[in-house]
Amino acid sequence: MSPEEFRRHGKQVVDWIADYLAGIESRPVMSQVEPGEIRCALPERPPEHGEPFEAVLADVERVLLPGVTHWQHPGFFAYFPSNASGPSILGDLLSSGLGVQGMLWITSPACTELETVVVDWLADLLGLPDHFRTDGRGGGVIQDSASSACLVALLAALHRASGGRVASEGIDRRYTLYVSSQTHSSLEKAARIAGLGAAGVRVVDVDPRTLAMDPAHLRTLLERDAAAGAVPAMVCATVGTTSTTAIDPVPAIGEVCRERGVWLHVDAAYAGVAAVCPEFRWINDGVAAYADSYSTNPHKWLLTNFDCTALWTADRAPLLGALSILPDYLRNAATSSGSVVDYRDWQVPLGRRFRALKLWSVIRWYGAEGLRAHIRAGVALAQKLASWISADPGFEVHEPHPLGLVCFRPLWPGTSPDEADRATTRLMDRLNAGGSLYLTHTKIAGRVVLRMAVGGVATEHHHVKSAWDLIREEHAALSARPR
Image (cartoon, rainbow, N blue to C red; front, side):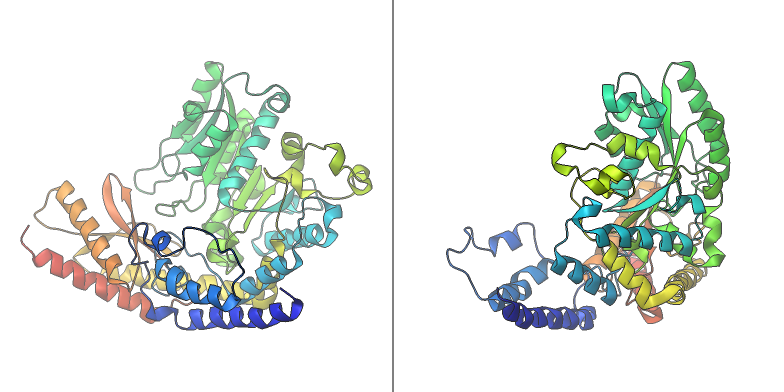
């Protein structure tokens, strides 16, 4: 493809994306295809001869688009937002066009140095401590996802807890990781990958009302494991759990970790970016004083398309000790001088994309003011939704709901708990099948509840109100049916 052909087809692609985003509301949020339908619509063998790019775009529209669940749809309330804003898409396009592989500083100095600036900017926007800045002992890096950030943090924690033995000798004794029942499943996966196994994961009790980790029970588990000869390696506190956005008490957990010299990782994947607004900085109470590492996802709520997770560490030495390997073919004068950052040492893979470009584009386009406006709008809509649900005797809201997620349960008088859970699931399935919205569920105290996450780029007041009206209508229709 020549530069002129690229120019022509590139304009076609940009126009296609713009038309897609402009008309997205007319499409059903969830894909309507059956398993295997997309595969069956595609040829079994690759083409022998090249095809015009117009044929590719035509098949995107005809074959692939019916199999897409539209995460940018204003009626997408499932999981958490995965915002793909215009400046972020364009930043990603620039990254693809440059084709940079930024494993070392020398392989593209701009890739590395822009990333150090952007993660420092983001730390400043979130009010994170100065020792997380890249020009200090610690520093930040962009990972692909919070799952990778948690794994990297665990490897650094194991390096410190073992005095470097894990990197050289492997797992030669029992190390333990501490989570709650509300912690993301990626932490158990990290424990498996790191060699601790599921048996090395301890589940700390939570407050039955707030679902936040219980520091007293954490202390008990740490003491018990230490007495049994285990080495507590890391505690993961969550700021905004996936199920309900519960917020663990980081200051109290941090005190327990400090008593035992245990690494504290704070996973703020969804909620951390809310701290761009000064009124939400309370979510990070205790981070400056106690956190050894901290991560949050601009690719969820901060208008940056997937993948983009920011990870900071208070001291980079354990991280580099755990992950740095330097074969001859990567040696160069800049690396040997010790004056540059080589981000290959801050992650599991060697290669890395120029992810900083899209986050840089977003921050420059919106500015701090625009980022705050986006977060505040999502929170305000979620709180309005919660007020509507609270005022309806047919539903109950889970408290607290301080950010953009509202969890609620429809009531089914005269039914057993199991029957009520089945009815709630039927309600969710009917709503999702209708095409105008998409919800997910979780369980609180063993009961099924619905989750509605507000914060999409295109989601406005009337979308939330229409969704709530539809929920009430479907609930009334199901309630009227004999069971």
